[in-house]
Amino acid sequence: MADAAPAGAAVELRGVSKRYGVGGTRTVAAADNIDLDVPSGAFVALSGASGSGKSTLLHLIGAIDRPDSGTIVSNGHRVTDLRTGALAAYRRTVGFVFQAYHLLPALTALDNVIAPVLPYRTSFSKQERARELLAAVGLAGREQSLPARLSGGEQQRVAIARALINSPALLLADEPTGNLDSATANEILDLIATLRSDRAMTIIMATHDPQVAAGCERLIRLRDGAIVDDIDLSGGTPADAVLRRVGQLG
Image (tube, rainbow, N blue to C red; front, side, top):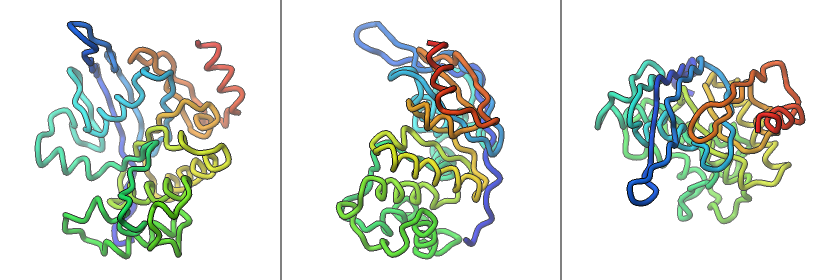
């Protein structure tokens, strides 16, 4: 790669809140006065029931959405103060991976990886980097394959390669294994862990699966938009222990 690997973004949230209207004057808290520190290079799982605020938190950190109140600092950027061009520039320093792969069906794997940087001048060869990334996610030789000719796991690998095209310091993954069978999910999780180590990224990943969460170093549990538990998994906590802990915490 032409660029040096990033050091990994440190993320800090202070008093972050976000509410959405659900009809009439009623609102629901998707983020409720959240304080959170994620150090550089960390691998963090966000867990909780549907509607607990996992996706909202990722969207706020990634500047896809704005909080109603509070501050977010990521990789030295006070995200909540950014506007227009600075906001777009910040988003390009963050990699996003979603449960739905969001590949463009008419584009090859190679062109899907290049798509986020296509409108911009870059300091690197777009095609060369895309080929290197596809090789890094195990898809060397599949550069010209259309998404319809790829399995679900292969499509997610393309989506991960696409998320890395700008050498992000922060990767945000929203249920990246949710559409995959357990064996393929484990492969994708191992791939993400390896890429994180190789590229010194910070990763924040939303998941409902305790086995996926157990592969992270830290588990943040959310309920009704608030953090209800912060579990250190850096000692290699087994998945069944995570499941018991989550069950005990209700």
